[in-house]
Image 1 (cartoon, helix red, strand yellow):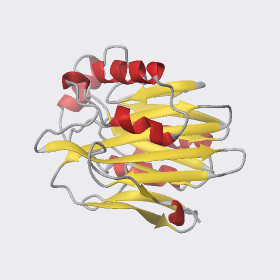
Image 2 (cartoon, rainbow, N blue to C red):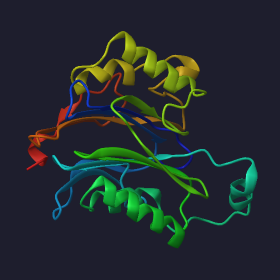
Image 3 (cartoon, helix red, strand yellow):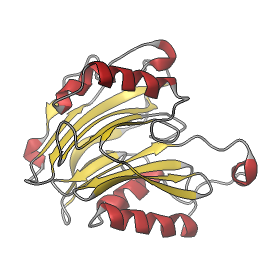
Image 4 (tube, rainbow, N blue to C red):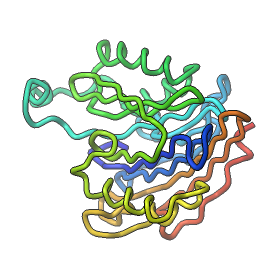
Length: 249
């Protein structure tokens, strides 16, 4: 996500059973911004991800069976010392998508967390939330002028443009309601939720010039390494998901 857009990431830790990860993600972006659909972006380590053709980074990707990472825009602070920092202006040194791509080259979620704490002190990034998960754990790293890391425990979690499971975000509330009413068993079960259009609670956005431009589904069994990746190169409400298993090696 870039240019002030607000993506939605749905994550099931140990769902539907221990040792599994279910993930669904809508990417909201400028409709005219060029993008390359997920492909083998890095050969060693083997990274499959989409690519932003403007800045060269990615919004979501994985090392099959080993690591998953995604990045979302974060609200810019409006009060406190962090707000003064961003009000001072100045362009970021680097795209947030490149940060996500760097994370996908690392060996573990714990290593990503340690690395990002140093990275934000040496390079200026716009506010973000970086999600990362592997067999040992899942984390959200928040940056908005200060760095915070939250470990995500088993269950369903929703990330948009604030903290994980933000109780004041109507979109996150709507997604959690949907998950409670019909707990997903497979990643495909997330498509109806990713396709909802309910005003401020909408997950699939049809606005112009920004809106939902693509959607992804990921399923990982950490014990066996079995991984599934599906991608819709358009809005999930109207675009078929393509099976990307051939890319996973």
